[in-house]
Image (cartoon, rainbow, N blue to C red; front, side, top):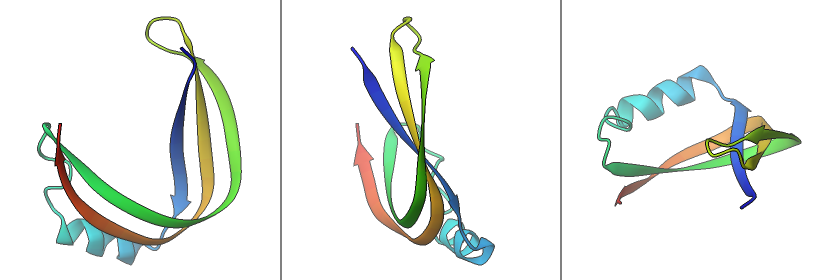
Length: 79
C-alpha cells in the first residue's frame, strides 16, 4: 500500500515553545498515551520525497515548511 506521511518544519518563537513545553512537561513521557497537539501554521511551501518503508513499500513524505502561529494541547488519547 502506498502511504503518505505529513511532517512539519516550522519556525516558532522560542518563548512560545518554551511556555508550551513548561505548561505540558509530560507531553512525551508516557508511551501508551498519544498526546494530541494542534498547530496553527502559515505554510509557505511543501516538499515531497519518496522513501522505502520497513517492508520495502514506497512511502511518500510531505514536509510543510513555514511559520508557527499557535500551539494548543488538545488532550490525551489512549490507544
